[in-house]
Length: 341
Figure 1 (cartoon, rainbow, N blue to C red):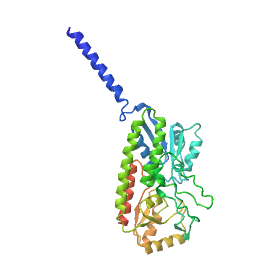
Figure 2: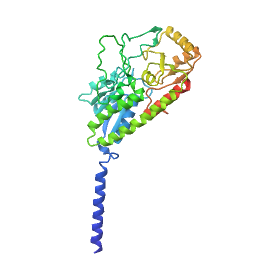
Figure 3: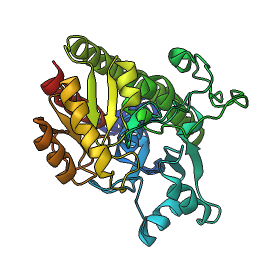
Figure 4: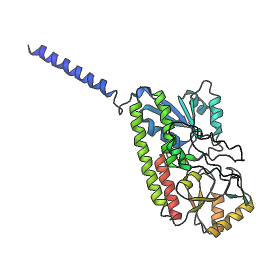
């Protein structure tokens, strides 16, 4: 009699275990590993954001290698194949990574494409900076944009549909990911929507990850706001104009840039004027970037009695202290703090 009882007991336990396994497959924290969504992005910060939002449901790659500039990057044949095989291809847009569009256009049917610049109320490229000794000002009419308007619009609306036909605007600034609030309120929801479309039955899991990561971005913003609020200096000089969104969010001003166009050597006259600006404004540091040679910044610093610090808009895997978007922004905050507090 004991053998049948034992067999019945084992059978009961097996049924119980199988029932538990079936239930946990639907729990948000336990996605099916064999149903990953393949996502390719152009730059590392976007890849890290996608990884945080998608968790175990995504397999993410990015094209721009650490130290390279998106302004001058040339993708390889292997990277073109990577894009062709992806489910989603995410890029910045607004002229920063136009090579990405060409890459996707040549990939046949290709992936679903997400141009993030179409989600953001873009700032104009920094025409107010005294570039090459000339006051460049594209703002011939006043559109008094509410910068925080985009924070309330999470529904995929087109923020760039404003009618600006009455005035001549310059190009848009594409470096919007350097504002954590734009990332929290615009980039994250846009990426989330694309992931939900392709991960059937996992909306609860993705919602959970979205809420969690947005909370981390709020903490990051609060930290940056508290630190920058104590700065005694508000103006800074950077290598190229990548920091308008960051500066506007935290009440800092990009007074001037060394090179308006990446890869283009500034004139001797502009270098001389930069030295004068640094002395007049008592700017204690020039901010170089790892994507560009630092020799010119070092020469200007030497002539002006300033110094060179590094800020980084991109980071990357294996780049110490910048291996996630959150770490990257804290790295930059520390550099600003060193010279401006």
